[in-house]
Image 1 (cartoon, rainbow, N blue to C red):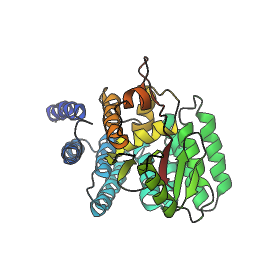
Image 2: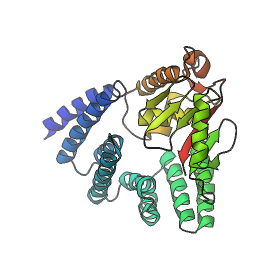
Image 3: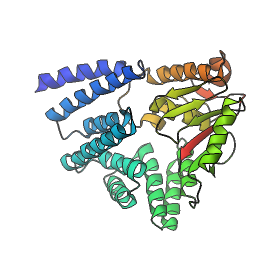
Image 4: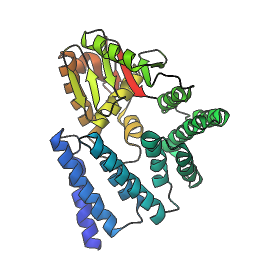
Length: 319
């Protein structure tokens, strides 16, 4: 078994080296390779949560249509549930279950169960801060806003370096009393506000008329709207671009981005640069500009990345 595991680890290194190189059908092939790889890992060692978490994340990323996406969500849920059984003292699978139940099913009691289990089992670092936010949202949704506010204050206290402030503020906005507006709109240097689907349609039309650039994270297909074209983004590309726009003017180094977008995943050292380059190519198509690297999404001399566009940007998210 040791030889088999070493062979799989070598294959994993090769597989990770190819992350971000393909898009569309090519990326789906890469995801399917990963699913086979981590399925094999689990056959050899069911007690290592990392394999379950990676496998579940891959299923969540793979989905050509809504039916397939929902089916893969169920697979991801089942994989993580089994991980909690095989490794009941480790918090990571509980942490991920809390988030996917909040995102996919809005089953708030289950969100609280798995989230509190992860807290009790010692989840730490940036994941603890994010989990407190997720629990705060769940408590608010089931009618305990004071408990939610207490957890947000705890998250703020733990975020000494303010690296997760963007995430905390996003969840504070989600926690505000729900009305009929199901979409959160974030504009540069302004607080988020809730808008209707009709307002969203008008916002997207204005973007295509050149008033601003819009990143739509509210729908299952992630799109960036500009004056020249509407371009599809891979999920992680969209998540990274949304993070940078939300942090306009803030210089984000590679480590900070990795923590924000990938948490504790094993990564290729070049992955952030690779994704940034792909985002720049798509922004160039969407905006019809060839100065993206110099004027929109900039790399500093110290290797930090910063969104510094002269055109206003808006990000749409689900409440």
